[in-house]
Length: 119
Image (cartoon, rainbow, N blue to C red; front, side):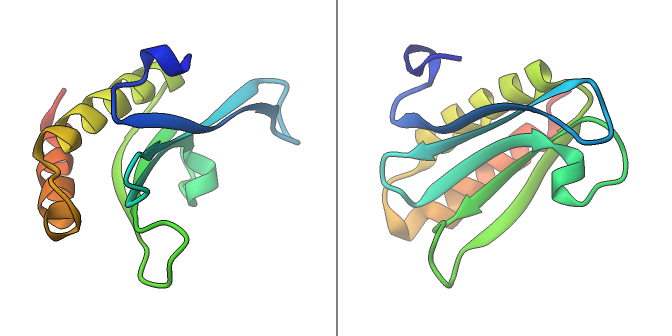
């Protein structure tokens, strides 16, 4: 994914490909950061999130890097591409509701609820 494909006001923070020690399969790790720096969205192998099953996990972290940061699991799906499509949808939903620090939790909950229910 290129920065042009990222919904405004988001940017790609990290985009890495790697091979796990116990596999020949290449995995991908991608994080996005909201321009406010109040939210980070991560698409990563589920095993990095402590899950024992295959696939990719979508996680949102509010106030990343601060003591009061909190990570929230959004969805786990089988493929990177599907997880990344859900991440883009999540970012669009969050941005539509977010209006500053006072509403971060409301926007996060709204996007989480809408994304978790989406099939």
